[in-house]
Image 1: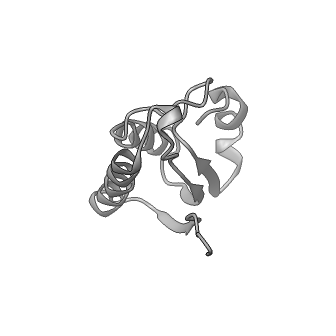
Image 2 (image 1 turned 120 degrees about the vertical axis):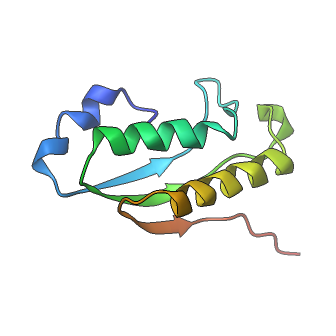
Length: 103
C-alpha cells in the first residue's frame, strides 16, 4: 500500500492469494492517523475481491519523533483487530513482530 498501486494490482487477476506488509507511514516516515487502517483495508479488499489476503507483517511506529506515541500505536492495533473482526473476507494470517526489551 506504500507502493504505487499499478505495481501490485495489475497482477491480481492471475493469483489466488495476496501477501502484504503494512506500515501506514508517509514519505518522511511520519505516521498516518491510526484510523487509516479502516480506509486502507477496505480499499484493498475492494480491489482484490475473492482473494485470500495474508497480512505478513504489520507495524506502527511509536516514536514521538515520527509524530506518534504508544497511545497512537495501541489505537492502530485496536483498529486493525476491530476491522478484522468486522469483515467477512479472507484475512487468514497475521505475523506480529513486536519490540522486545532485554535488560
